[in-house]
Image 1 (cartoon, rainbow, N blue to C red):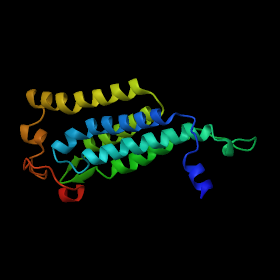
Image 2: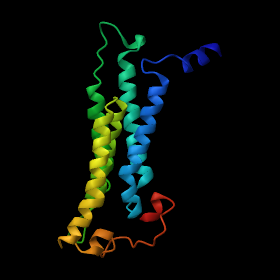
Image 3: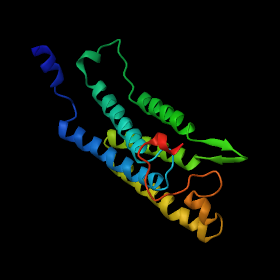
Image 4: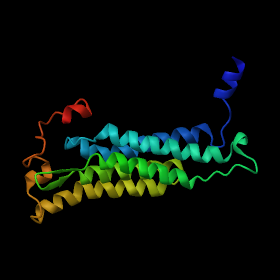
Length: 185
């Protein structure tokens, strides 16, 4: 039993407070990216974007910690944290691709998929301690999602119904958020 307790509380290279701050930051910035998708009742909303960002941060922190683990050191062991970037990017791209649908001659879900991909990048940035990159990426996404969408309507590039997601084939905004991602299909 003592071995289990010792294993659970083994010191990490990154202080626990920093790990907690990074994971909390990933949750917050993932929420900022996902909130617009949630408000417009898209299939991948608030929780999905939070989970993508949080998981990405966890993988980044694990990559940092793995470099410093004594059990993974030695002449025959090669650890490359950059592979974590590749793996997370590919994994999130797979999830994002699932959001993209071609129906009735139109492509739907590109913005949601791109938002998920960005949430993964923001989570990775925070996980690696690159707070300013993550914060600017999340802020830029808010400008793109909230401001540019309205600008498209103002310039008559999109109808208000297309922007609001009430065009044919889009879910109607009931004003009540869906309780579960499955409720939106």
